Image (cartoon, rainbow, N blue to C red; front, side):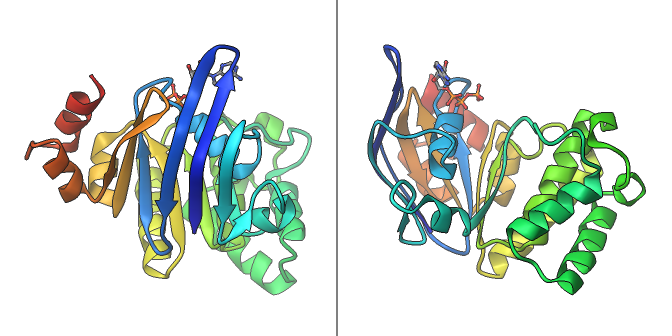
Length: 238
Ligand SMILES: Nc1ncnc2c1ncn2[C@@H]1O[C@H](COP(=O)(O)OP(=O)(O)OP(=O)(O)O)[C@@H](O)[C@H]1O
């Protein structure tokens, strides 16, 4: 679903992403792990088209993201780590705007806005202006917007940060359901336990370079370590 080939990105003298290669197959929950400043957000921003890579190629479902940006964007929904959205809209206006962009029919959008607003306990706040939302509420409305149009690919940057325990639990269930349904979820996290319990595959990035990739068992084998992912992560990134 996502193919990253020899991708690099430099800011000034800082090589944030260094000749990165990664392939994410459909129907998986794929975790992207790494310490602060490792290059996770830079990679994600290049995948979604917020940043342009200096070199290399990224394709989504076979569509080159630079050659065909609009077609590639039709394939996914993106939830950034900080929800910066239209403050002057209400939650419902924002969700209808997203539904318009993805050309959703009226019946499906009404059903899905109701369904996911209930799941994330936002139904009583849908007609409030987003400017009055808390950080977590903004995060939830962006998440609902990403889920309502049922994209082939969900790209989530630190999705559990800012969510309360119940919403975080429900999101993890939705991620699993979607993957079981053949959809792809690519997400970054600092929370090792989440990655360990939820992911089918994991990539660990450090200083812009992938240092381990595979299933948890494969990564454990690579690290010659049978302990928790946290131990392996510390061992690999030290
Ligand atoms: N716009 C920018 N201008 C200059 N340097 C940048 C910019 N964005 C990222 N960097 C640098 O690139 C490197 C990778 O940053 P990135 O945000 O991708 O890391 P990250 O793995 O997402 O980190 P975190 O877990 O802290 O969010 C860091 O050294 C960062 O300082």
